[in-house]
Image 1 (cartoon, helix red, strand yellow):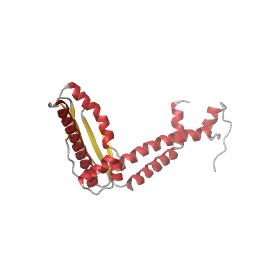
Image 2 (image 1 turned 30 degrees about the horizontal axis):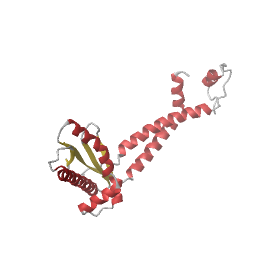
Image 3 (image 1 turned 180 degrees about the horizontal axis):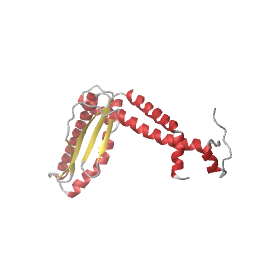
Image 4 (image 1 turned 90 degrees about the vertical axis):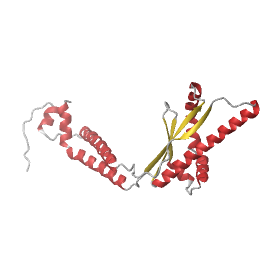
Amino acid sequence: MRPEEYLLIIARRWWLVLLTIVVAAGVAFVYSSTQDETYQASARLMAIAEPPDYYTDLYAKNRLASYRDQIDNYDFVQQALASADVDIDPGRAVNALSMGHNPDSNIVQVIATDSDPELAATVVNAVASEFVAQMDRENEVIRETYVDEDQSIYRGGIVRISQLDTPGPPESAIGPRTRLNTAAAAILGLAFGVLLTFGVAYFEDALRKREDIERYLDLPTIGQIPKR
């Protein structure tokens, strides 16, 4: 087929393409409009190597992956909420919680997304504070153990965690993205509509115009029944 023939197929059934666009965009708009607004709070935790040399710093970076697993689990979140003395369901907090990590940096990000902005900020701060306190306790045990065994100041490498942010309740919602979802659905509707027109044309066996007879049968038109 020549390019103009593809365009002709679409032009003949333009209403079908338009219909799929309107339906897809309408469904996305209605769905997005009925969703609750969501808010996101985040805090950065930095792993600091002590003493600050290359190998200890590399060790700190490698530990970050395990920190994500330590933080994002039910037992730890439950402990963090209890330590912060906040009345939040641990299951809801775990569902709101996620982690971000750039492998090239010494920073891991604690993120909470929820329909309640105060809850999101509270969960992030509780989890971040508890993890910093837990790592401080572990480091103290390491120091005391080496002092007891070697009777000398511990000079091996440890990783200290520092909380860089203490977020408050976010003021603006991050979702739902009604306009973006509607536009994306419209584009998908356009693509589906075009494919649908080609599918209809492929399975259609009627020759409706003189051009169709000449194109597909390679026969001249000798007569035409007028429309009433």
